[in-house]
Length: 149
Image (cartoon, rainbow, N blue to C red; front, side, top):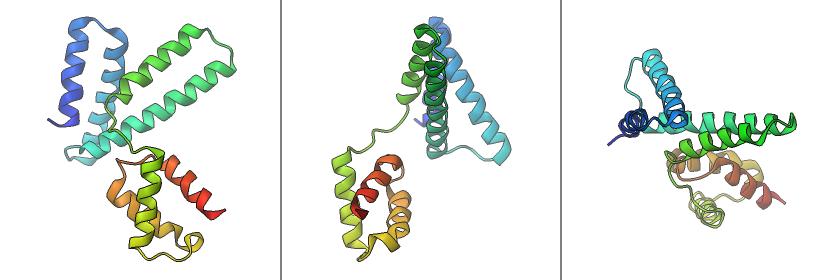
């Protein structure tokens, strides 16, 4: 079952259960997916759906920050947190910080990189090509920055 099929089934279930928050989040996500399908005129891949979900989660996190800064009621923040939790279910499990560090070290050895400062791009290129959905790019960036110091 593709990720799109899973989201569609769970959207239908949310409609049956009258779960308004889940229904609205999944409806928005399905609309975004349909827009991509229309624009590209191709079926959407799971990687594209995951990228779309990550983008939406990032937007929700920013919204939570704005709500907290504006001292909005906790109930508004809780709704955004609930939306975030709904979307996170569809993301693949990412490697832990330790596992990511081990993977980066192994890649550096495999690629025979001698100077991480000048060949950082090579590590990132290889890592994102092979393990994009398995690693958190922010954590990878932090690990590589720590290696530079």
